Picture 1 (tube, rainbow, N blue to C red):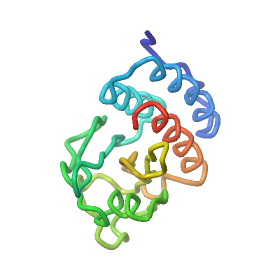
Picture 2: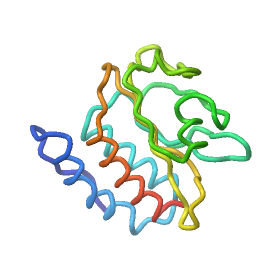
Picture 3: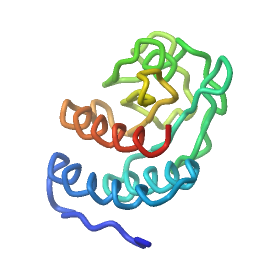
Length: 162
């Protein structure tokens, strides 16, 4: 069992994503418990990038419900179509929000969050079963590099958790 993740701390985000992706795959591939896998993925992303908040919201009935995360207390339930997470779920597309205060209908779980990226998680059949949500306490902290890296990690999660 892995007890740590290795990455080049001084490298740019693109390099770090490429370094941690295979480690995430190895970490969760042999574990069948979805909560354990999601918790470890959140921990790896928090450790590698120092993001303000990293976590998962999972479809339960007609809402997204808080799953494993790293960071301060979060919103527990989000309606489909509401906020950034609900919008990403409903549109089935990743969303980068440079300034959360400019996003119509943003749900402020923490006033310290300034920017956000949300990536949907898909079952093998193609339906959305949740989202990977990452918040930063810095404005405009996410780019196409983060979208590409987090989509790769979301695909790994989807293979082992859905």
